[in-house]
Image 1: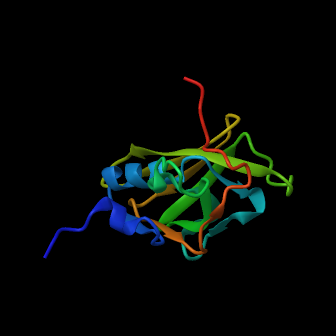
Image 2: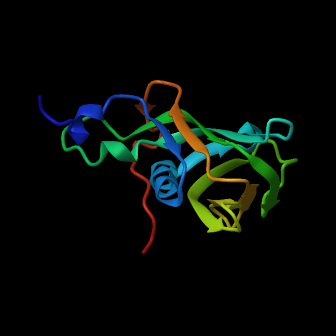
Length: 156
């Protein structure tokens, strides 16, 4: 029996869970450059759940010479045990706004609590005060060719 290789999972949908800061860094990397309409951001106060339906760039595919163009996939990003939500630099009343997610940052508090900050392009941010890290990323559609046919890039 051989060990699994990274390449073996290339076409499989992602289903990941983060329970600590290292896990959250992995998910942050995979959601970098995800885009989503502001209307796809919801907080269920009673269930203490914050969710986003994002169009995630498939970074795990890596550069593939001669393969199909860069891809995106719709995915659910769900944060459990959310105590409060605050935003900065975004207007929830602008329902046509499309946001770009740059990173998920973790700031530890006391006794496992802390803040997960969704860093958005254009100086926007959403801060989630959480009881603990409990984040799930799950692809919910088949991959599709990125409309731009380009890999996102960032100036250095």
